[in-house]
Image 1 (tube, one colour):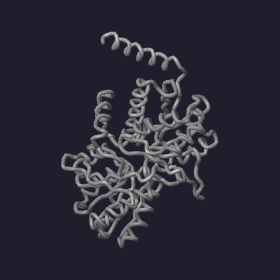
Image 2 (cartoon, rainbow, N blue to C red):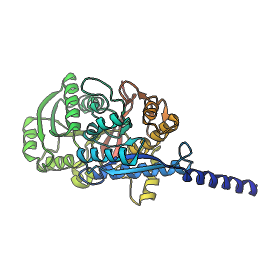
Image 3 (cartoon, rainbow, N blue to C red):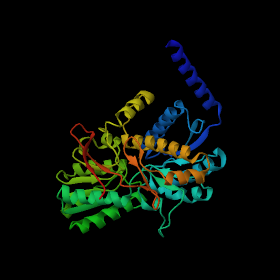
Image 4 (cartoon, helix red, strand yellow):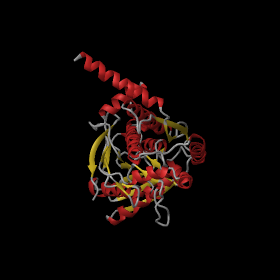
Length: 382
């Protein structure tokens, strides 16, 4: 028995040695490691590294190790474009993961199409990321998240039918593709349900004082405030709203939510609702969050980004394996043909006509008295 165990150990060492002696398969990752969205980007790059380490320890893909090539977008599309050029021309990546904002993937889509290198967004919910304005599929652009039309529908139905709120106010970033898309679909669906938009106010990227807009919300008689924003902006808005006395109005937002918002807004976040892809209470994700904490010596606070990036890394590896090569066109075909792939937070089947996940459930979170997000309900696609 001891000889057999020693034999297995030797085989494992030989396999690992063979994998790491082979030329690595380079995969790019676009992440905002600095700038406004750094908490999201750091969580994603860490989770992808952790997943690739696990895959490599298990033997890699096609007999080769995976190598993650991470570039900091600085949360800006122009920096992302430069990073993608370097990934394609210098690093020779066969696939690009990230980013987590629609504006970045919209900016990089022409580059990956020309180079025939697939790119998969994590939280890139704008429909135009994968299908252009004329309805034409972008052949090398994919996503692992749901889209703004679906997310906007969930938000509208939740506000009107679950919360029973019939007068909505909206406060949005006029320069954000993500915010504009989510806002548009919320308005369309909320009105269809018989709800009234009583005020629709905008702000710009650099704004930190939202009291003027919130005063208009207060005077409008709204009983629900929809925030189609990202991170810091929404936290500041919520904090200032409560300070102005908007304590009875329900607040609903999308997957731009991040746990770091609770550090900014404190107890003002309690009772707010967020539509997203996963939740910290998911038992299937618990081992991943634990490994993340052990590996990086910090809590997987931005659990949504950790989840999306971790599962994206495994989906990417699966597609490379099924493609049987590092050819970008072959990998894109494998991504498009993904069916019933069991990931940690859902089972993935791609819609080849849109490059969107088919029937991905939406999760609604509620901020509890402990100032942490908790699972509230699941919304299954109709």
